[in-house]
Image (cartoon, rainbow, N blue to C red):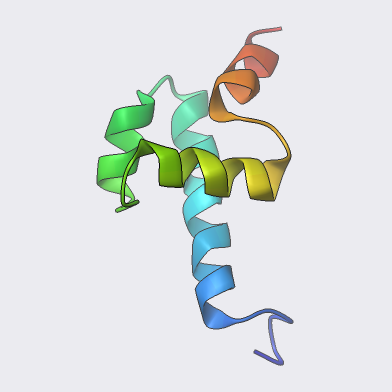
Length: 66
């Protein structure tokens, strides 16, 4: 906790969201990302993504295409 200035669980979610962003950039489907990164469901993934990034995955994808 002291090394990363966050809890282990929060750090783990940060890593999963970073991987999700990479996969979204490659064109992966949100459902497939949820399955691969072991989120409970799509709502859980979208909620955590929005909490970390401030936008939904769909908005993130739209910004990548601009």
